[in-house]
Amino acid sequence: MSDISQTSVRVLRRAFDILEAFDERTPVITLQKISERIGLPKTTTFRLLATLVETGYVLQTGNQEYCLSHKFMGLAAVAQATFDIHDLVRPTMERIREATQETVDLSVRDGISRIAIHVLESPLRIKNIIHPGEIVSLHLGAVGKVLLAFADEDLTERLLLSAEAEGIDPDKLREQVREARRSGYAYTSSERVQGASAIAAPVRDHTGYARYALAVTGPSYRFDEHADAHRKVLLEGAQHISSLLGWTGHRQSSEASPPELSGV
Image (tube, rainbow, N blue to C red):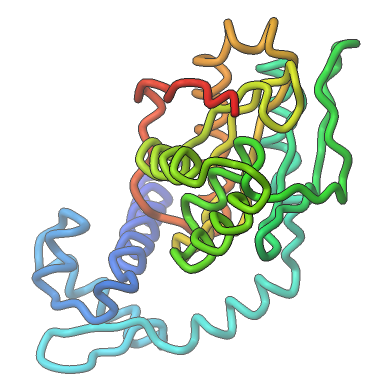
């Protein structure tokens, strides 16, 4: 690559760094703060910002304060029109299945239930099976715990009342949800299906909202001894898909100790 090409790529990357310096908490940022966030001198940052302002992607709102323009709303509409979650997640799900040799599924939250929308079965003869379109209450299984962990409190309380009516200990469920929120994943055994274990992680969109959950499931007799390795692969996959959806938050550490198997 020529020196000119290298310079162009470097400038382009720095421009994207500037755009990603904005978030919901700080939609309007000073030149000084942008410079600090991307690690460039103020003079360099100012020159890049001036170009972004000139092209209409950034607005200068005041004395050395900047925000993103509505021009991004048009680009977002184009992205939404071409977006297909199945096409987006399949390559990552295939990699997870290859690494774990277990069933991998993606579910979406729907009220107090979750629906499996994409499933890749384990290539092994003895496997855990969940069918696309299968609906499961959020109080059952690792996927439910994860979706509850990152849902609003009102939904969690509704589900706890429903679970109590079905004879499930709400305090235990509340603690499992709290643990899933703390660690960034859930790990259950013989809960939804007797003799099956599962690990699930949230998939976040650009706002940090976790509407989807990614899971690896398999027979407990072989799954549990490889649970730590499965967890690391799953968390990396969920992080990658989240980044494709626009999430730029901090990576959830895959080195955290796994919670105890719930075995409800």
